[in-house]
Length: 168
Image (tube, rainbow, N blue to C red; front, side, top):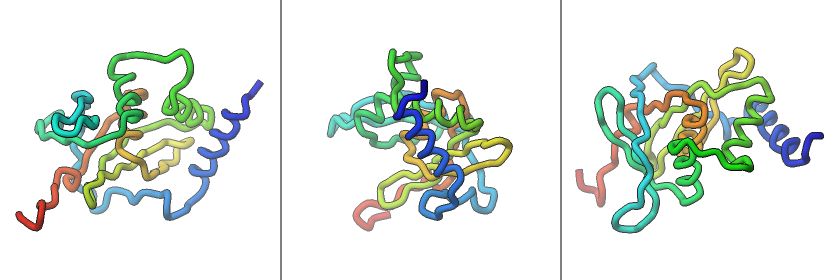
C-alpha cells in the first residue's frame, strides 16, 4: 500500500523533473569551466558562533571550502559520513527513494558560486537518459551525493570570496 506522503513526494519530484520553470532550473556550467572534485572533510561548529560548518577539500589541489549550514542540514550530512541509517527515512532518504522510483538517479552535484555570502549548487540527475539540472542548496546536494556516492564538484567561482567591507 502506498502512503500519502510517498505519493505527495513523488508528485512533487515529478513536477520538478517535468517542468521547465526558470526559477527551478539551474544554468549549466557556462563556458565549460574547470570543475574540481571535492571531498567532505566533516562537519564542525564554528568556533566563534557555534553554528555548524561543512568543510570540503579539493581532491587534487587541496583547496578548501567551508560553508555555514543549519543543524538539520548538518545532521543530514553527518549521517552518511558516519555510515548511519535511521530506522525511518530522513528527508534526504525519502528524496532519493522518490528519485529512484521515478527511474532517475543522482549523477553529480556542483557547487557553482558564492553570491551575497550564499553558496549555490546544482543537482544533476539522470532521468531515463536525459540530464536534468536542478537548483539546490549546497547542503542538500552534499547530503544526497554522500548517500549516492557520486562526485561533489566545485567551479572556480565557488572559491572566489568577495572582499569584506569594500577592501580587497
